[in-house]
Length: 320
Image (cartoon, rainbow, N blue to C red; front, side):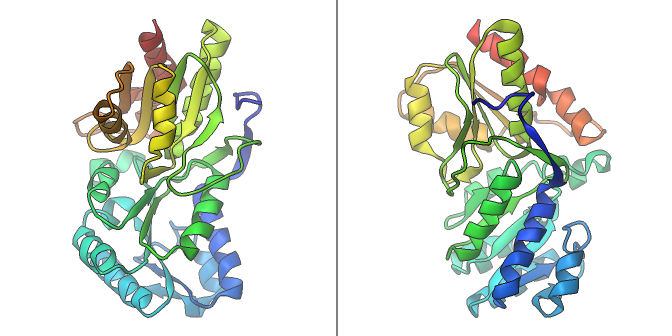
């Protein structure tokens, strides 16, 4: 069954809450699980973790560069370290430490960027992380992931805890629906097809996948247009096999991301397609090259077309 507005089961939890709960589950039987935070215990939903495992959480204060350095040192000693901080600061202020202390030094730190994209809403561009995919894609030896729902979040944390390479995982703040009751496989570097269609493909990542599904439902209901929807949860490594199969069908392709239109999911997909001689009609939906409008995440999404109506309108434009 395809995911639609009618059969998406709404979760009562934000992905961050699932992240915290999964970490608590892991820490019960593994004392090597260590959380390092930069004054983000509350916003990262880690207060229960700290209460249950006070010896497995370290607070460094508002010092993101120290956060990454400490995490790298612990990882080099064999600990399974989750470094948790707002994505806007973690991936900008501590970029040099991510590049050198984590990736170049091959320390398998799990970098958790919280309140990502425009989750901070009215706090504005200083608190938005619309650059993280772009900058981290250029760093060798780093997996980049944006889970779309509670299932992908749980699986990403379980997998990250056991992987021996650095991983960046970004989370927003809002409660998220479960995307699919059938597609229950998860692997870094392998996208999830959460809805099958024949006329157009919408590729989303993170919290943009839910409005993509709603747009697909609208297209079918109002225009008899059948849309495939993909959750491309891993930005790097990208699922080139899936992209190749989608492009070979000849369908127009839309990418949707809570990120700048430069350097993120859309340009990663476009680069692969054009270099492999695919010429599907193609559109990137994201944040344009400007300081974002002020408002909530939902208001910002609506303004830039990262919404049910905006995505559906873009699909209509490509199909017709």
